[in-house]
Length: 78
Image (tube, rainbow, N blue to C red; front, side, top):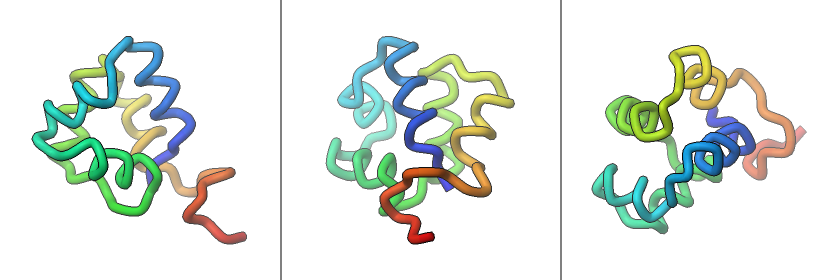
C-alpha cells in the first residue's frame, strides 16, 4: 500500500511536478492521481522510475510504496 503522505513529501522535496512524473510513466495525470490516492496500484516498473526521478533510497522507496498500514489514507476503513 502506498503511503500517500510520504510520497507527496518526496515529490515536493525533489521539486518534480506530478505532470513530469505522469509523463515519465507514460500515463495520464488522472491515472497518476488515482495511483497516488491508492485507487490503483503502482506497477513495479513505475516504482523504479519514480524512485529515480525523486532520488529515493531503497529504504525510502520501501517506506513509501510497501507500507503495511497507512494512517489517514482515504482507501482505508478502520
